[in-house]
Image (tube, rainbow, N blue to C red; front, side):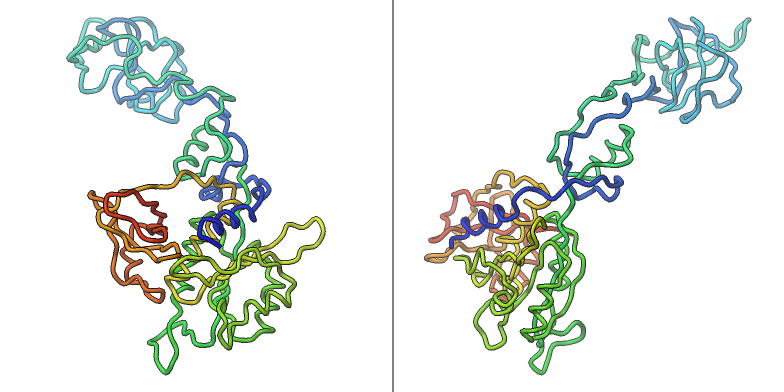
Length: 402
């Protein structure tokens, strides 16, 4: 099927997002809100000083009130027990500290001058403009009120979202459970360490793919090597505890390409078997048999060549995992081509590119077994059959950075 059809089928296969779970804020990052984020408190929860200086009441000059602490009111401490700030008085205050009742403004440290007087020390305003009421005060509820919806369901939980949730009083967040992925790296010819030689090559996909899959919303459980053995592969598929099993290699018709046979023996149903895309066309998506009432598990079969496997990941794994994690697909990211981008006569081409100011530029070393171009890429251009002329807009897919 076409590249667009395969992507759509993979997204549809995910179905509804996985069930919501409530998790601590740090664990929620990378997930998607399953319900609206609501404030559990006013933010700020109390009137707060926005600057180091003096909390003052009414017009100046102000008589400086003696407080229990020589530093005045500090962040994290309740205002002095002496009660409200009387008109015409001032007290030292730090940024973020709670204002005492009766305070009408904060005079910044750099704008205040203290002089002695008959009744004690007097604070004078030497700022460039007269101090107006409410200056440098963050009033209670300035950002939100208790119960106010802050973010809608479906919002990705970024570090900033986790910070907002913490500021608003939340300890747990409701997010869709992230799909668990097991990565099976197939092939007797692969080495985990050392220099390639004697017909054996280094495994590049074991180090590469987990971060890509996590960027699509997954939790990568285990990365396992499986040799060229039909029974071992079949059992690995049947007994995997993961929501999605991702395999590398074995998708073609070579003498030890056992993935199709293993899926057939496991009773799997193929949803996608080959895609008109270069590199990576011998990729597949299958659904494993499930018990009644148990959610189906999926298998994404990627080619063994590194860049071809990446093409398979963005074609099938990304839309499937994002659907399971509750992530929206979003609008395509379109960029003008700085030069003509050559295409395949019948197939979509995924091309490593950089994105300078003048537009999309292709990178060299873009063969199915190569990673040198991808290592420098800022995206993958989706080049339709026949290519893209210079000046035309082309869709660019994200290249995960970590």
